[in-house]
Amino acid sequence: MAAAAAVAADERSRGRRAALSFAAIAVLLGLPLWWKTTETYRAALPYGDIAALGRLPVAVSVSVVFLPGSVPADLPRRLPYGDVREERVPVSCKSPAVCTARPPRALLMDLSSSEADAALHALQDSPPGSLTVYVVPEASSLLPQGVNVYVGKHRSALVRAGQGLAILHARLQQLLQVVSLTASSIAAALSDRVPDGQLGPDAWRHLKSSLGYEITFSLLNPDPKSHDVDWDIEGAVNHYVQPVLDKLSLVANFSVDSQILYYAVLGVTPRFDKESSSFILSAHSLPHVINPVEARLGSSAASLYPVLNFLLYVPERSHSPLYIQDKDGAPVATNAFHSPRWGGIMIYNVEVPASPQTSLPLHVDVDMLRVMEVFLAQLRLLFGISREELPPEFLVESPGNEGLADWELDRLLWAHALENIATVSTTLTSLAQLLDQISNIVIKDDVASEVYRAVAAAQDAVAELAEGHLHSAFQASKEAVTSSERAFFDPSLLHLLYFPDDQKFAIYIPLFLPMAVPILLSLAKMLREARQNKKEPTKMD
Image 1 (cartoon, rainbow, N blue to C red):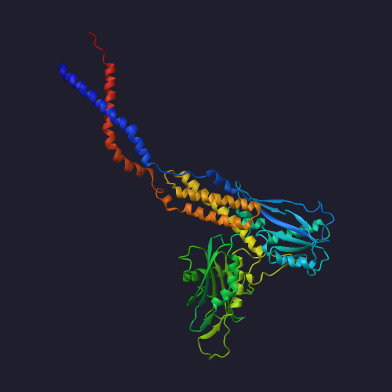
Image 2: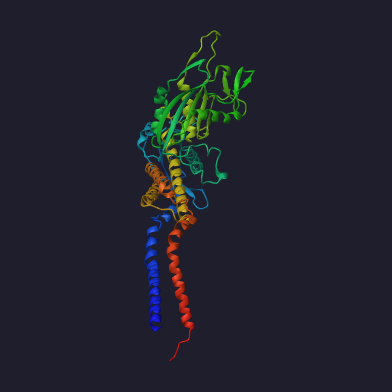
């Protein structure tokens, strides 16, 4: 009996040691090994630097050059001197954008009137974003009679001195509102972050900043049996459009294509006007024109970049001539209209032959000069390069065949640089919030490197904007947008995005439960036996 009891006690002791060993191995070795091999790898991200991208200081450099006899008598300081004017544009309550117009130095140069006039064209090598204003005497003959401010097509302007510093200051302020970065242009560039009440009606008309744009010219001939339309689109693009795109190449990459669509109608039945014996498209019916036509274009289906559509519509013979009326019922001079962020449509009427026995189809040669004037004006509107209403004493030089002046290009670069930085800030902030809320998303090293690269490029762009270096700031902002989009749309971020916790339990419970139940039961049995041993009295011989 004693031997059997000793053998049983030895077996129980051996079982307790085995259970404790398995439990120790599972807790001390198994759980850490499982935790390490199944943990979600998350590379570190610069959350603090991302949050600091909200402030956008912008410096616009303006040099004021006084010609002999133009220095106001009430000038408060001796030349040369510097001055700074700051204007704060509220973007949101947390991240205001600051626009600083900084006239760094006013220089007195001994220039004659002819030399000053030649200097307007010699400033082509001036850095982008800069502006030089030449103050000429009030009686100077450089400016035509009745003109107080002349704006060249480069980065320079002529301003009459006026009869005192107050008049000169007012003219300079008006000039900067025309040619330089203003609060309204900043608000339009940051329209997604500006309160709606502070935006003008044209803020939503401009194209969003993009690395590239596709331009499609389409000829719509709904009645090919009556009209044989011929348009020299290749020659027109090379002669009229390409110089403009060459100048805009600093902003983005452009691709141009063309197409001819037969039997493509507008989808809206025009109204016949008996007084003019013509057909009318009213202003309220124009929005219904685009959708039926857009379904036939097919250009935006496979495009990676925004598509700008410019349509030339030749009305069918049964609806000719066709004219567009504005909201007041007056005919539109260009017989065209544009849709914000989409493109424009021009109606090209064909002269009805005098003889009713003219053979059909009637051959039509499109006047591409008249058409391209309209399309280029619409292109300027889409990019926000349209000029505001100027004071009567202003004279602005025509940009010529290039389509836009250097200072207009600078304003576009300013706006796109600001919009790119704001886009990077929004994209990285959204990514950081997503990764913070969902802890089981894997953050690979290549994703983290793209985030760091985007933050560094955005910081460089902000620093360059603060110094007034427009070109380098814009290039840095484009790099920041590219890196931030690569990080945000990386496929690895989506693997565990829709992997809820209940699926984890469904996977791991069948794996660990069969192993854990025997260990837990053994440990429970050991605890019960230990409690019973404490309750039993100790036998004394």
